[in-house]
Image 1: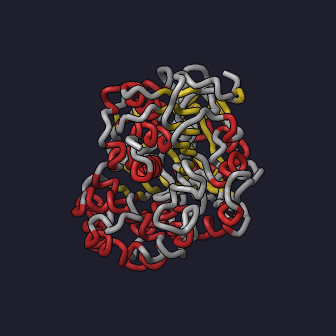
Image 2: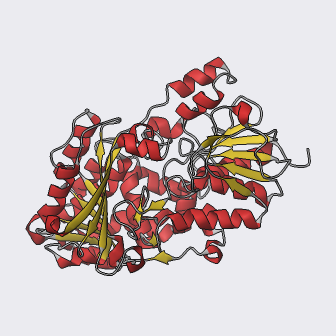
Image 3: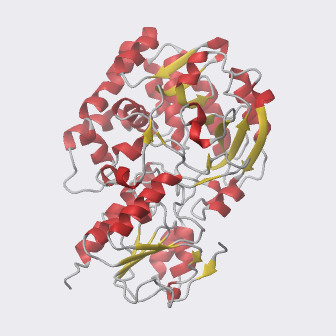
Length: 487
């Protein structure tokens, strides 16, 4: 469906209490939270299908399903916003690989992150005890810690003891924590986990990213959604519709003036889009603060249709749906630092998912897929296809011979697919310490704007990027706190 400009005669019901702009997981969770409280809710989405970062499409060949953006979802099981919803009743099924994560190294070596901490430690040999000491406290804390991390501005904080223990190590740079290890396997594993932050591995808090993602691998695994990430969005829409809410797709909102009258408007948008839609109404000081919001590196994404599974040198790599390609801590660190300095690494850190090994329904018999991306400078126009494929070939000789179709998306393509990916930044903005506490502005209630009835619910608000829906949940609860329906 071709996107059209919405006019305020379009809502499916004559009266609504809340309008949400954007149907990513945060927008949909915000809508569900409000609808659960009795609000009449409508969601407007510019694309022809809901989902934002959780959409799937036939990008290469007919019948071959690729996840356009997010592909692996540990937070889908760990987030309190998602695990509380009856998503399975609306078709969502999680597929767990044998091993959450594989990290190949040269010479046929590999570090495997198993669901079991003990099994992972055994595989890390001399560094097994140090790994257990780092990760086990996170895993023992269970959802107490993840719930606290996903609600960073709660006062008083949720589970303060667990958060304090985590913070002592998590605040450190990943490069410093990696000094606890003597093997490339253990330090490389930590580097790959930390590199999801899209920060320098010498930056404060990057150890926290590694601990959280590694801990989630042990706590809930790193699953995929059967049939594609689109099923996450579709199941959220199903829950919303059961509560009386609705989603209108193919409807691009360019101004608040185009929206129907409502008690509250929630924008699942980053600051740049917020300024475009509402800037003329926002107080000048607040608008200037939004204008100073910083976006991070972009991504270059490669989707492949293959004539067979990837022929990894170490066959254990095939046991994992997610593969981190970058070998050692120094190599991964150098690649990420290149990106932050505006350069394109010759050996980029590549994040790869091999879905069809575990979910054959995504492609016709005999066809496999690879989903891969690397970080690039924000707004880059450099084609990284050859560098990504060379990295994969390094650990899987003969891989290129299996490629039967390619689809590429650089930062411009990512932003065209989802306007929240400004310059290809899939995290909704830099997630360093400064912008963790001021996301998008400093304060205990960053989801509320100075404009009465206008709220923000995108990943540019706490707790930040990821498919967890918590930005939307926090924003909706802020609405309910400030504007109870009985008013």
